[in-house]
Length: 108
Image 1: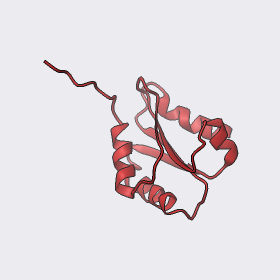
Image 2: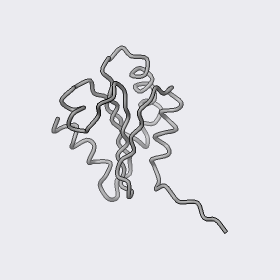
Image 3: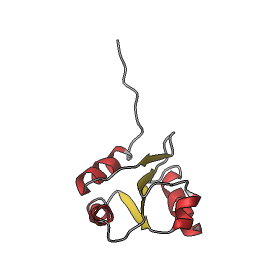
Image 4: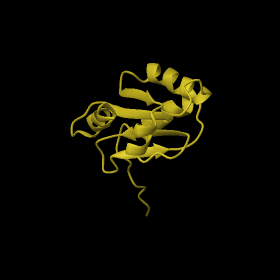
């Protein structure tokens, strides 16, 4: 569990050049887990991804859902949690959204 926390904190450090993303999947054979692993290869240049099946780690991060992804970043939000079945492409898009701070829309 300490390794998972240290992994998450790497992405939250000021000046971190990569976002860190932790995938929580109860079943390692789950299609979502396979897509997560495939996405990890595609975004390795700008994101570090890890996957866990551990109930202890799930509890430590407050994940109650069967499937969840949390991106840890250095911006104000510090983390972005997504709970749903995602395809490889959707996982990649989620990660890309977390590379930069979320900017509010300006209206006139």
